[in-house]
Image 1 (cartoon, rainbow, N blue to C red):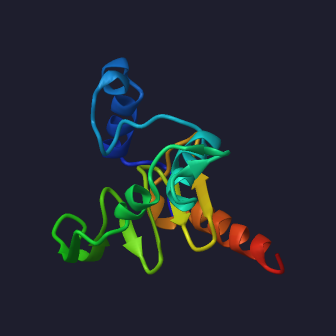
Image 2 (cartoon, helix red, strand yellow):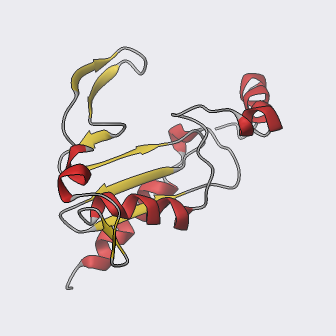
Length: 144
């Protein structure tokens, strides 16, 4: 595949790095952080509301994030999808991916949150680094 981004992608990348974009209050698109900070915040949902001994949410509040709100064809992405409160639902796990390949996966049964963030935008269709990291995290749980 051609690694050169399309002119539309170049325009979007330029917009995403602009001060106005970074100051914008876009709930689904303006979170900025590194993988460690994203995983730490999401670990509240993976660990029934408690992170590093501090209760941030009730267990019931943490569980609400994965209560199904929608199941059917997502008309934007054109495929079947299940949604909780701000997250895609994937069996017993939930999470979401970001523009350029970043992702977070939360597994309350394993009490684990895995996040992957990028420092360079790519078209996500052929980028499996985030998924590879999630699978490696599960491999690391084997035998514990």
